[in-house]
Image (cartoon, rainbow, N blue to C red; front, top):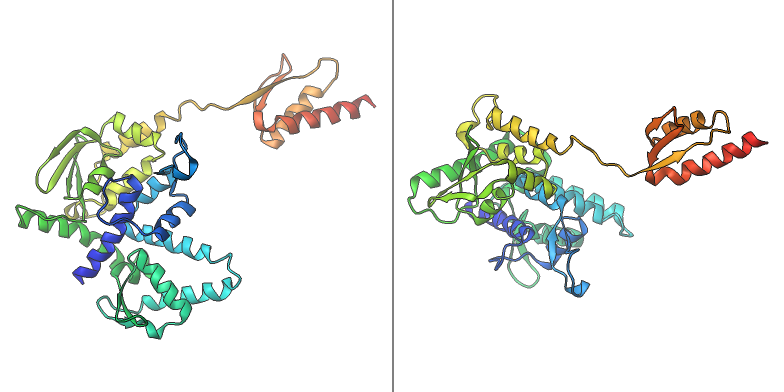
Amino acid sequence: LANLEQHTQEQWDAVLHFLVGTPKLRHEPSPAVINFLMTTGLMQHDPDWKGSSERAPLVITTKGYDFMLQDNHQQVWHFVVQYLRSLEGHKKAKELMQEAMLFLISLSFGKVGDAYPSSSLSKRGRTLMKDLSLFGLLYVQPLNEKMAIFYPTQIALQLVHEGSASSTELTYSLSTKTLEAALADPKPIDSSHLAVIVQTNFQLCAYTTSELHVSMLGLFCDVETIRRLPNVVFMVITRDSVKSAFNLGIEARQILRFLEKNAHPHLRTGNSSPVPQNVEDQIWLWDRERRRVQWNQVYRIQCHNGLEGEFEATKKKAIELGAFQWSADSKKELLVNFDQVEELVAWAGKWRAKVAT
C-alpha cells in the first residue's frame, strides 16, 4: 500500500515540478502528460521568447497556478474531466464516454493493493488503463508483451466519492504522516507530504522535506525570510510576497484554500479555521487593495444640441447595451465602453436619420 501511495505522489510531483520549472527533474512527465498540460491551458509557450516559436520553452499559466495549489484529489478530477472532454471529438465519442465512465465507476469498487488482469478489459479499456497510469491513478505491471496487471491507487478509488468522510480522512492522513516522520526521525528522508502551521505573527512553519513544497510556499511567502531545519521550513507571509502572488494571477481564496488543505492535523480540531483570523482577514484586505480603482477603456460621445432628445435616447440605449459608464447631462456628453462604441454610434446615426425624416 505504501508503494502505491508513493507511486501516485511521485507521478503528481513530477507534473507539479514540471509546472514550476524545476531544473534537472528526477522524473520528467511523459509526452502525453506534457501535451495534456498544454491542451488544458495549464502551460503555454513563453510569450516573451525571442527565438524560434518551435523552441520556445513552456511556462506555467494563471490557470496552472490554480491547479498547482489544489489538493491531489481536485487535480485528479481536473484531469478526468479534461480527459472525458477530449473524447468528445471522436467519431465514436458516445461509446468511448460510456466505457470510460463505466471503468471509473468500476474502480470505486476495487481495493487498494489488489491486482486486476488487463485481460478482463476491452481494447478501449486497456487504452484507458494506460492513460490513467500516466497520472498515477493506476499502477500497471507488465507480465509479458500481451499481458499486464494493474493496481488501483487510493486516489482512484475516491473519484466517485468526492467529499466523503473517507476522502477527507485520506487527505488529513497525509499531513499526519509528515508529523510522525518529522518527530520520529532526526534525519528524515525525502517526503511528499506537507503539514503547515500559520502563526498570528504571519510566520509560516511547514513540516516538509520537499523542494517542491518550498517552491509552492515561495509563491506567496517571502523567500528571503526562509530558515531551514532538517524537517521544517520557516517563512513569513508579507504584503509584498502576497502582492507578488496576485501579480502571477493567484487569488486570495487559492492561498487560503492551500493553507487550510495542508494545515497541521493538530489544527483541525473543532470547527474553527486552521488559519488565524487576523492572517485570513489581512490576506483578503491585501486582495481588495488592488480593486480600489478599476480602469476601463472608454470613448467620449458628444451629442448635438440641434437635435432634441438625442442625448437622452443615446444614453438610454447605452444603458440597455451595458456600455454606459458616465455622463454629463448639462454638456450632453457620454462616456461608453470602447469595445461597444461602434454599435452605439451606428444606432445613433440611424436615430438621427429617422428623426430628420
